[in-house]
Image (tube, rainbow, N blue to C red):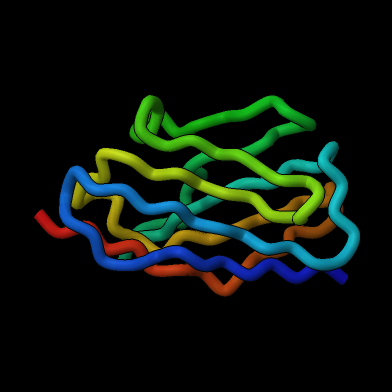
Length: 115
């Protein structure tokens, strides 16, 4: 059984930075996709950044150059460094781990960017 716990969200002014963490417990394999998604009120949940397979990463166009995904395999923790935040980045951010036959989600952490 895999459990994911996000932390690091909060309120920040536009142009500021936050670092989100996703602590994973259970059997985590770096070959499986793992990433960050976000969902704003009234909108669908969208990919922000992810490790597609091993070290290969994918970013949403809206965050390229501002957000960086990373991981510490020894700590089973994934991070999302978010710089130059914009009000449109406001959303609940979720950690996701996909084994190919099951999706695991964390409880989410709120990020609010004020203008």
